[in-house]
Image 1 (spheres, helix red, strand yellow):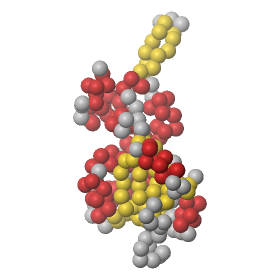
Image 2 (cartoon, rainbow, N blue to C red):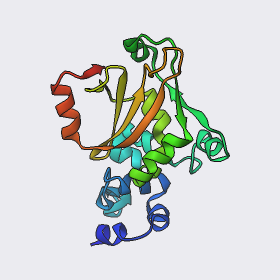
Image 3 (tube, rainbow, N blue to C red):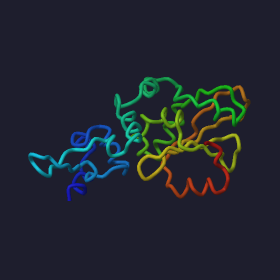
Image 4 (tube, rainbow, N blue to C red):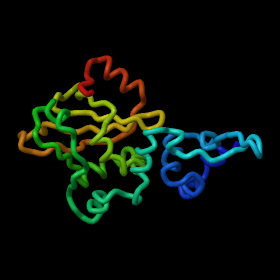
Length: 203
């Protein structure tokens, strides 16, 4: 079928057909090709097909993919690739920061940590444009089960979650800024299991 054919095509072809945001959502499993086919009735022409927008398919969740698709890579990544050792990846909401006794809401990403997660999880390259969105507006935040000073940010992306591990109280002193340790995709059952273990702290 058309969806199977499209799934075998390179990202450039998928983006040309579905748009950049639609292509990202398609590769993440958030949408299928059939989702873009809408049907409506015209008094003059009868039953008609039309192309549904990503917003029509996903509602407010479409904004995640629009953010990811803008400019290929966010400005902070361009600076990181330009040779800086670390950059600001986003700002945590104050009510989340206070859960760890922090006034500092800035979250950093280092070149070393980025290389670490891309080596282990190269698929995260497609999600780097929404890391700022994940830090700013997570769906859930959990405490790490092994280190209470570490937060885990989750944001739903298609059938899975984008998961960022953030050191909120880094070892070495509270004067250090929070920073990202790792990023990967997580299955829904992992998030549910963590919540059942009472590690969910926000919202």
